[in-house]
Length: 523
Image 1 (cartoon, one colour):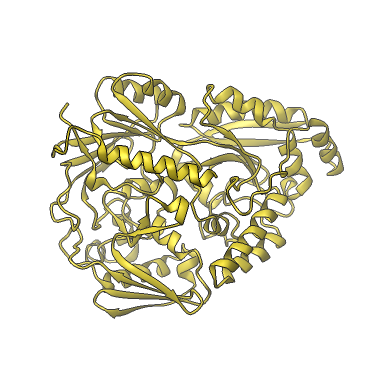
Image 2 (cartoon, one colour; image 1 turned 45 degrees about the vertical axis):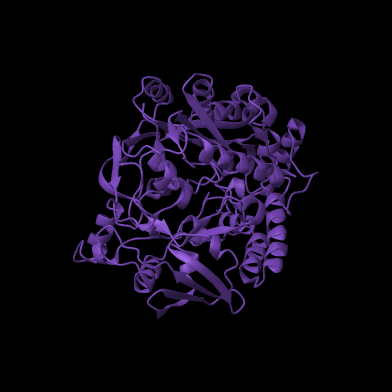
């Protein structure tokens, strides 16, 4: 039912995007000014792009395919740099037929050789467990690339659609004499095939793009895009009111509601994309938090309803969560959940020999006000089981480092988890028993032997049916092992001036923005 509702919402949104405006005349020109609270961590080096770092790349770098508007209903994709694809050999071989007539921003051609070069760069960097398992990337002809893997890759299309971007081999190789020099240059200099190309980037201030007139999809309607970095939500709201910006993305919830209530703006809420929670650092078998009883005690001591009632501002867009799967997910268990029970929490701490508690730290991203509020409630609630919680605010860069590479043992970390319409991919990503050098979402969460064995089974599933079975088993095990405290389904939000038209930013996915179709009415 939930997927049906999501599909209906998508249909209405897409219809409103394409039917909005003044008649059929689309105004060209102008620079779209977008407020965002976060700096880019990476602009042009895909093997180190992850999480929110990638949204700066949507307008300049491209993928073989992206999610289609009906992805939540039919798990469908639409081709970008590829026009079609197929798998064989038990999902170990993936063949892509590439789009012809595409050029990078430096004028060099997009073809199978460029795709192979990118795959080899992923292997060299070693940051992808998928590409680490690659046997070869074979050029079958000028516009056909074939990826061959040792093990089945039943979630490869999700990776294709969300994180495998392409940059110009020629620009990269000319950028330095060593791999270190080339990589350092590429981190801040994206040279892709997208509708816009980089002008300049100043950390803490802005990232600017200009139209790429030779874009394969046709000349973009906008002249440029300017991301304005503004961490403070009140300042961002006031800039929108003053007409100093046209969009506010990853907007804070309070400011989103306030702007939506004013004339001249519309807001968008993208649900099921970012469950938020609290994650114990439990990798170390000698740590307190490796003990399941301690993780369960922490969860039982937290009163979700009280916290969410306080921070949701009365909006019905927020849903309390007690497990990762949403109700339409095959792994969802209606009766599962560690609901608030203070006595049970105390009993579990005593059983673990920790009735006197211990001291810990909870790390909170400084730009997310609701997480700071959540941390204060958690601090008070865990004091009831003798856990002393210190709150440490961290900047967005430190947040991403902790998120992907780990935070200190026996501490807590608040984060959001990018959800995807293909749950097998989410489980494969979040419950991966990764070596330290491979980035993983919420890297310091527990890895039990049972989870690792089930993760391996998911990786070996060579049909969609086997993959779903393996996913359900892994997801249930992760919930039983209290890998994290899922708190709430908090929607991603954005606010638009009402003259911004045909903009599909978070219309159905946080991983898609077709920037070439966005335009602005005269204003």
